[in-house]
Image 1 (cartoon, helix red, strand yellow):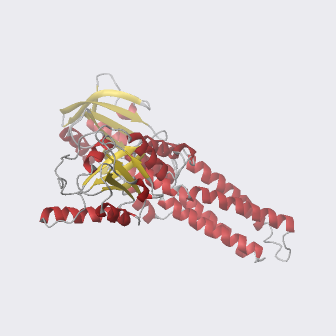
Image 2 (cartoon, rainbow, N blue to C red):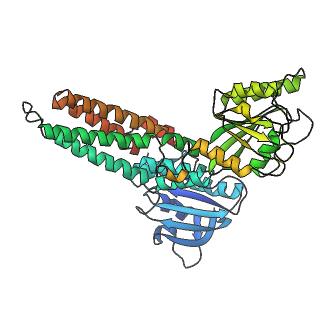
Image 3 (cartoon, helix red, strand yellow):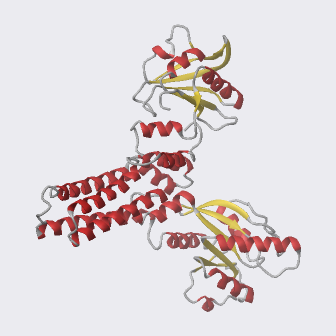
Length: 455
């Protein structure tokens, strides 16, 4: 698969300033020679120096398709480590597609999703955590998510895994040194030292595993439902968090008849906010369906913002919603603090709550801080670990920790060194899965299938 030449449009399909057609593989320059006509007196792509930009035209049967720029990048100093050219056309669906078609006619193959990055991984330019970080950078919706992905792309997680792998490899060497002397037991001091090394490694693995929750939040966001009875300001709260008028706001109860989902950034946290219809008893068919969908959104939410009217006393509907929300994390948002208050906060007891006016914006920053404190569990984002593992990493790290535990247990029970060494090798293998040193094709297919074509 790596001996063929692949091509794809590397920019989003549609109208824009420019489009880029990327070609990479052994025949990249040969193909470029056939479809690119340089300015008079300038070298053709196969003869041009590496990392140079050339002006010319994309041509088909001597007919000019577009005025283009072409970048020449010679192996191994390229993204894939293979010969690569990038042809920059004017933005537009037709012209870039025609240039791609020319490349495909000249023995290039259409790249599969993520295939350029997969080649970078397979050819050793990046490890698997850095390859995954490429997708995270593309999908980042907040500064915090971008910072975390950039740190991983720079090799922060790789460095930590490699350091841990090296320490455990040295520990394995100490154990294997005794394999030729099965009748000789470890000295008490040696056994204690190895057990201490295993314990420290296990703690390091734990520290990484604990970042999975925050990593998931930064990558995927938190599904957040805004709920409450009609006319308490749910849609106004959505608009305030978004900073734009997305939902219709009316004094007429029951205006919102369906759920509305939008992405908002709150203190660096991506919130996938669902504005719901007011939950109350209703015999009107459309409103009833909206209420059913609201209840479903609440059931699926990872966080609920329960809006109540601060200018009114707590109603049975409010109390019912508070009880319904208790099965998940939720924040009581007391709205309408710009007018006279009648709400009895004593009923809330120790429930997390904050006060706001969706009309004036008063209390918005307090609400954001409350959400952030809840999400980060009282810490600040900056106080967290420098890297954030994903669910794949977490599974491999959990398996590594299991085998470290078995290794330590074997040493404590004075099992044979062969068995102890097998457990520690298994721990190392699980650790190597994180960086892709040992990973099967099915896992790679799953990871890179989520990439766009051209990346």
